[in-house]
Length: 162
Image (cartoon, rainbow, N blue to C red; front, side):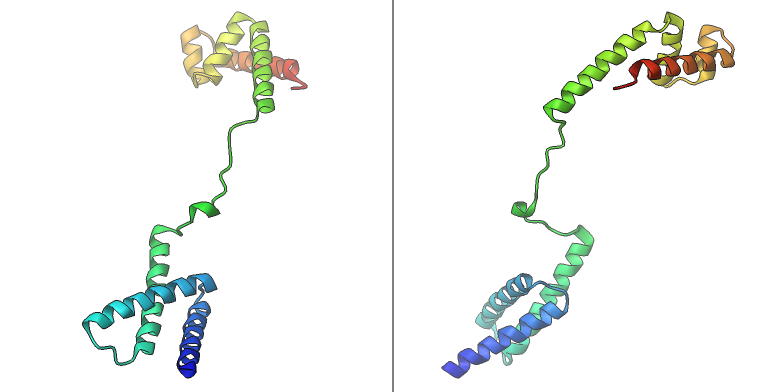
């Protein structure tokens, strides 16, 4: 009986080593070997297995190949306990600073002349081109460019330090 246990342990080591050589972790190799063992036992209920060692080795290697193909086509599966969830929401301090910057920007925008503010917001917020703005306000494109540049310079200077 001791010889049979030693033979079984040697078989387990050989199959595990074969799977590890093919890129599996020891834990994955043990899982594949366990699955192969279950398949052997199920198969033995229906048919005679002449060489169970060979059956185990071939089944474990096939399971490994199938697992590799599955991970290539579907991506690697990750256990939930191995996932670190990160909260991407800004911290309370970041939210407060953002509100202060927004309030400061709102104050700075109010300091612009109405025409410059309207042209600047049409370009930066509404995404209109200089040509579209020029047509709407009956201005030359260069005048629209000047209003946008003026707004940028003033806002940059007023927002400095934020």
